Length: 117
Image 1 (cartoon, rainbow, N blue to C red):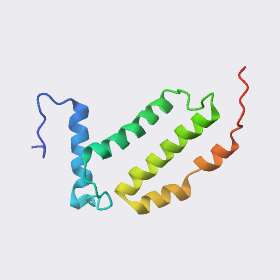
Image 2: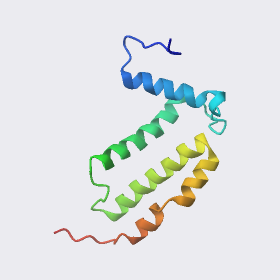
Image 3: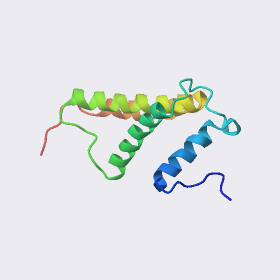
């Protein structure tokens, strides 16, 4: 039998989210000792933000914005959010992601003035 029981009202996504949260918090999986607030809602809000970005990218929606300052703000938020999630789970993994990321160097290559068509 499964270690968790599906609620009649819960969607599959809710069940998976709950299972993932319990797995992350499980001491056998590390227990997220670096996430001191221990509040699921805070962690979920960060994960939702990352999922929304992933969905935008997978559906080939724009992340390049007309206003360069707005784009920088948006991308800075997304990059900081990824770092926050990784550090909450495992700071060593966050350091590795940071050391391997090409995002900052690619962003520097982006021209600040885009001519449309």
